[in-house]
Image (cartoon, rainbow, N blue to C red; front, side, top):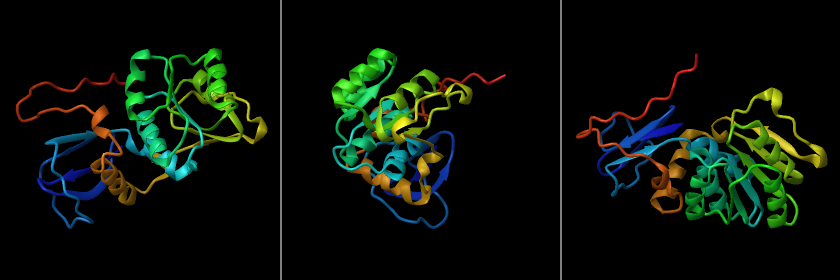
Length: 231
C-alpha cells in the first residue's frame, strides 16, 4: 500500500510503498517534495489505496457517464468506487456477497448496490445498465465473481483485476473484444499519485476517513488483529 509521514502542521510527502500505512503527527527528516496543510485528525491510517484508486484514472480512464461495476467493496473496492465517482462514472454499481458491506458504498458514491454475485446479479446489472458495463473493477479474489465481472461487460469493455483469484479457474468469455488486465499498485507512480490523493482527501472528495481504523498508540495497549500466516 502507500504512505507518507505528516508533521503537526504540514504533510511531509516523502512516499513509499508498504503493506499498511500509518499517517500521524510527527516530524520526518529530509527535504519534503511538497507541503500540504493538515488541520484535522491526530492519526490517519491508510491502506489499499493505490490498487483501487489508481486503477480507475490510470488504467480505465473513463469518460463522464460511463458505467462501472465494482466487485468486492473492501478497502481496494471502496477506493476504486470513490475514484469512479470523481471521474463522473454513472451508474456505479457496488457488488458484494456480504449485505453488511453495502451501506458504506452508497454513502461514498455508488448509485446501485447488489448483495449477490450469482446469475441473478448478472441479470440485474444488465437491467440497470440496459446492456453491459463499460468497466469492471474486480477486487473480490473470487473466481466466480471474476467470471461475473467479465461476462457482464459490454463489447470492448474492460475489467481490471486487482483480486488474486486462482488463475486456473479464471475462465470467462472474452468475446466481443472484452479486455482483462491485471494491475500493479494501480499503475501509478506513488511520488506523484499520493499527493493527488492527499489533495482529494483534504478537499473532501476522497473520503478515506470513512473506511479506516484509528488507534491511539499513546494511551491504548490494544493491538490490531493479526492475520493468520499462510502455511
